[in-house]
Image: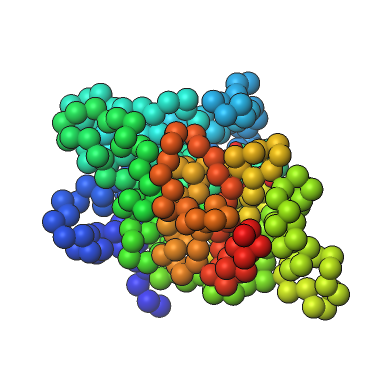
Length: 334
Ligand code: AHM
Ligand code: MG
């Protein structure tokens, strides 16, 4: 049997990839893995605990109903970032505004983290996979001061690391620091994430399309034609190249397509004219991972990673997936 490589060992081994690294990014990635184990503990027994399952009775800044687990996960990550000292501030999908950390320790932190603590949370109550998505940037403001909005509003191409945790049939953490993508599975018997998917590559071509087809009549005619041509009606069944798979949990849909090859689309619609998914917390981190794995991510026209964000909770139309499928879908958007 070959030796298990834990996430901690892997991160430490990779530290030398960053010239002049002082270990802060490594510590931050370790902190994220610890917070995700705390969240995983609650997610995995949610059905048994009244104080965990169900709605919080409030809506977040985006007008969406917050689940108790959204708030539990948000606090788990914020607390660990505050205590660690590597992070000078955060922005989270669950909070109205960004949060500069005010302690002297945190003001010296080099990084900011933008995250969606629990994505797909409408799936919690029905025991369907959900996830955490995170994005790490080097701060722009001076070390020793409080984080500013400019630290948060950086284009995705400036990310130094990004990843997600999938709370699925097993729990996985997948991340990149710009040197490829690696996946780790949580072994609950030892409480460690262990390397299970080294150097992940998204197949150039795939057969899966993931889109909420309930929106087909309220989205752009290009998308409608693309879905009709490649995914359904107009071709005889034997010639239809693609098969639909849509969980409605972005992390789970993305993870499947990363491994098997596929395309995920959440276009602008008349009910969500800017798109539904959030550039900073959802689209950028998964775009960074997709590109590192050989895939592509756009808003239908331009690479997601080149978009200069205008506001914290900005939404965009989102296309992410296998290179050739993306090129084909983009040709319908012209
Ligand atoms: P959330 O961050 O409020 O959970 O919303 C994001 C989720 C994604 O995980 C998922 O892909 C999408 O919303 C599903 O939306 P819809 O139900 O409109 O298809
Ligand atoms: Mg989300």
